[in-house]
Length: 361
Ligand code: MRU
Image (cartoon, rainbow, N blue to C red):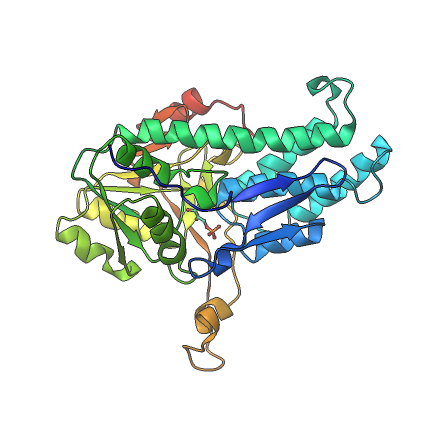
């Protein structure tokens, strides 16, 4: 069995202290891989900024961070009066919802936090703030468990010798721990299956180069970094047998939003006859949307393209379009690996039977 290394020296998202005085601690992912440092968020503005500037990113990790952010925000009008706590929670939740639009896990987690505030049955007798912290801790713990289950289900799809292409980062940094797409790879690696990962660098913010390559190296998984525009050639050279990516929001028919460039990878996989898998927990499904046309796509600052990492790389004043996500149509997806098993074929009926409406937002 290969040696199992930790993904990172710190937890991606953690809570320090008690409900009335504690705070959210995050790895600042904008500084990886050259520096691994943590930041502490003491108010909801700090949590909002951490999500917006991608200090914490990846759909499940955003949801967990927002849940803890809701606990912090719920204290803004005092820590004793339940009415004041509920009012402050609603205000903080409305505010945190404006941080990023695409990953449904953000909205799902905040819905859960608001529901927990109105449901004394979940921890009878305990003060409201403690109930809220317990709910945030439950969201984080469930996410960890879902990631492990996704890894177990997904590893069955890989065979020794597979070359696996992934895009963006769907690893431990994008979740409470272990990841979704990378969980599949970590799990196969831990089972002793020799898989080799090709990581797209993922323009413009290089989550593949900075985060995925770093996580895979830390766990001792063989990884080769490629530029996004090399995927077609690498597939043609028969170095890729499977594609596995994460997701930010999956509509009821299986259309899947993920990092910009994912749709192109899916088209390339189809052209080369390579299975294309999405790995995501049930919290990433948005069954209120019939198909992907209703998924809001975040547009980010043009500076990410013209001045990536500080240096100007385009002429002054050039027009820029910077959508952060795209939607891969369900018909290009071979299967969706969830904690409940693999959705295959990817269609509304199979999704309904496996995911149901337990997570409807
Ligand atoms: O902009 P990001 O870095 O938050 O985008 C992240 C992705 O697109 C991930 O692939 C997705 O959230 C899945 S994370 C398990």
